[in-house]
Amino acid sequence: MPSISLSGNRRQFLAKTSVLAIGATALTQAIPAVHAGEDHTIRLALIGCGGRGSGAVGDALSTREMGPIKLYAMADIDKARMEAAYQALVQKFGDKEIDVPPDRRFTGFDAYKKAIDLLKPGDIAMCTTRAYIRPIHVEYAVSRGINVFMEKPFAPDPVGLRRLLQAGEEAEKKGVKIAAGLQCRHSPARAALIEQIKSGVMGDLLYVRANRLGGRSWLGNMGEKANNFLEQLKFGRIHLLWVGSGHFADYLIHQIDECCWIMDSWPVSCHGMGGREVGSTDRGQNMDVYALEYTFPDGRKAFCGFRRAQNGHTEFATFVHCSKKSGQFSGNVHQATVHIFKDHRIAEDNIEWSPSPDQYSPWVYEWRDFITSIRTDRPHNECKRAVYADFATLMGRAAAHYNRVVTWDEVFNSQFQFCNYLEKLDYDSPPPVKADENGYFPAPVAGQWVEL
Image (cartoon, rainbow, N blue to C red; front, top):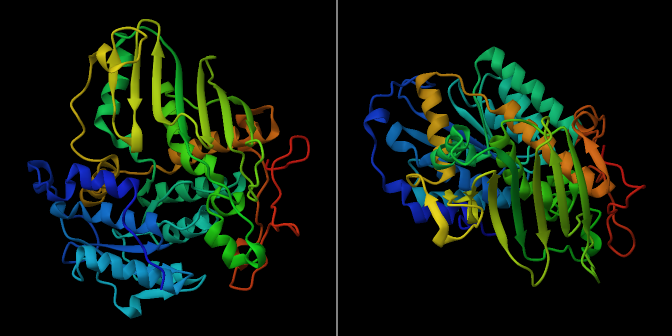
């Protein structure tokens, strides 16, 4: 049985901030219970039991001082992965909060329906699978009147994103609440810097700069597994665009969303460039380097960089550049590393202002806001904003792969989808992309490649 670890960036941050030990505030003590169940318990159904899903369960349970909450159902296409996740969660949280007996653990491509059907209005379907199937799962939960938490990225292609937009509109009509996995939007420290920018103390906002630069991540020759549908779902999250949108979209969507938040707008176009390392033997579909210039409606720019390469400078941060001063908006592992500098020199010895540190990790803020909205029955629908952030990300991905300028209208109206038989998927489905005899998957070649 494969092991499931709750370690990683999200879990490390959670541990560092010790949020699970923080007691209830006066505000949360006063929140009335408005949700499913006479015992006031919010029940969770985990759809997709990988590391991100298990981590999100921990983030959700960190709100338990606000009211009872527990994992009630699980679903996955891989029984061994689901069982491993279940055991790890029980070991960490106990069987009272991980209340998922065998008859509420479902396997198969229709397992998500069985898990969601156990929920009542006020409960939450946690849609944390690979991005390829996210729209279908969200659609179903909304059709059943069930609140949704959906992980990023939200869909690998424009058709999938438009399906999500429609699901979000239906949720709005029904009063169904949707939270999306762009957790940094919930950081008070970041919001405080935006208020400083709006106040004019830094001068006029000129441009934003965001980078996520890390180590190499190549896909080796998968041999007989390369063209097996189920195996592609396992190894393809960051390597095959149809599965999880590729490593650029999977990771840099956070920084791109931060740029749009700071600009308070969505980009109208993006000029992109990209390439692979010299001597690359990567069998996947990614480039190693992405350089993007986003243009917003008033002409201002956001410059975003992504790199997975060996022996390079590492950076994980977003910076704002104004006419008088510069500032930092975020830092490593999505930390709220927020400062205003005395001038344009970005250095620790040049910090002029910093907000009060965030009390929680951004993941926990995200869930506290979501749970508060459910328990107080206030509107909460992040679907459109999240999908627009993903449209901006796919615009950048296409611009780099096409090696040209791509417009918002071009990506938003595109009829392209990687897999057009999502509703018919089963264990014997053919994969929508195939490797050649040497294990190489089709990779972006400007002038030949199509993803819009």
